[in-house]
Length: 45
Image 1 (tube, helix red, strand yellow):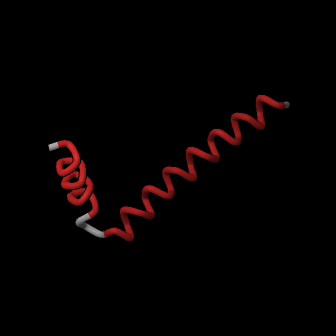
Image 2: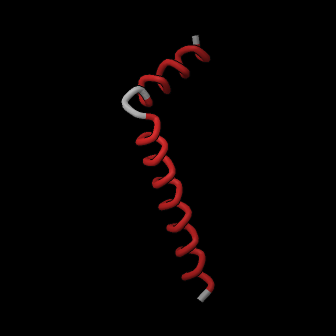
């Protein structure tokens, strides 16, 4: 019984994280991915 709840919580957390990423990109608009690449480049270079 406990293993079932652990799996459920793991899948729920993963689904929530994926939904959060999707919503972030939708709200961010078309410049979201470019902004992320620019941000990584700015910190790494």
